[in-house]
Structures are given as C-alpha cells and as structure tokens.
Length: 82
Image (tube, rainbow, N blue to C red; front, top):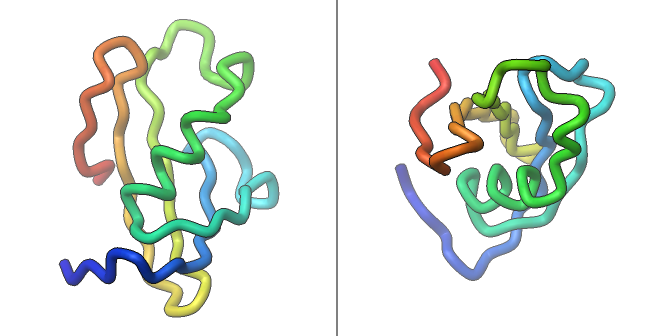
C-alpha cells in the first residue's frame, strides 16, 4: 500500500452494522487514520449489545477504493476486516 503522509484525503467511514447513509466524511492522511478518527467519536450505544468488535469500512471518496478494519474495542487490536 502506498502512503502519502501529509496529504489530506477525503474518506467516507461507517461501521459495518450501521447503514451506509449514516457514514461520516473525514479528512485524514490514510485509511488507517480515518478508521481511528471514526472510532474516536464512535457512539458505543450503536454497537451491538454483546459484541465488543466493530468492523469499520473506509472508502476514499476520490478514488472509490475501500478497506475494512476489524477492531476489538476491549484490547484495541486491529485486523483486516475481510
């Protein structure tokens, strides 16, 4: 993956279990930074009741490319969302 650190890009981000029309538009330098920024403001009340794992879909608005990240809310561990 090519990183263009310092260059701000526009991303559309939403949690897997939240409908796409509830996505947030964020300006960040990378897919990973956009996922972290989204989760920093993530409303845990919208999370599934007993599920402490959130899948986050991040789409580059300019290119349409997207990545999925799976984040364990207890440990903070992140993995590809598949």
